[in-house]
Length: 161
Image 1 (tube, helix red, strand yellow):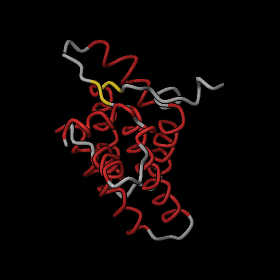
Image 2 (cartoon, rainbow, N blue to C red):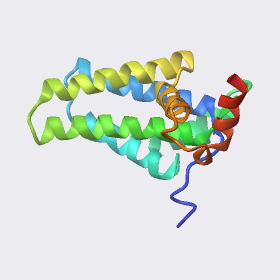
Image 3 (cartoon, rainbow, N blue to C red):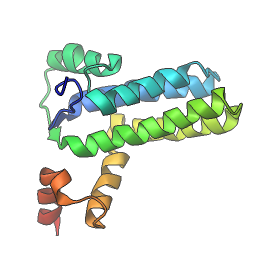
Image 4 (tube, rainbow, N blue to C red):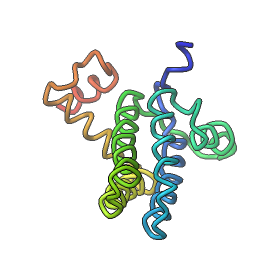
């Protein structure tokens, strides 16, 4: 059971960018076509990735087990805790959007959150810029995240100083 609720460390950036691209497409479709039913689908994906990495995430499984292994590219890796934090931010955005849409009837606010998420996911997919990861590193710099949470991240930050 412990292995089910684990998160990969390190994370293959190719897989992360593929998942982010899929999330961006789904988020844009949800906003552009006002498809509220996609909000809980996105929320499930983020919650599944936060809790189990790719294990219970259809997008995560497709990226890690099907697409990434077939790509003839040089893979880069990044620390898992920062990526998990980024997935948690996505979970907060999408769960909040789902509640706003389904419970509070605040469709505009829900789609605004998903639009912001689409921008962040697009940055990750297209440029490899993980805004959630940058936020995690900022939290480490400010002392809000202890170095023991991510020793690899702490080493990177120490080398940059």
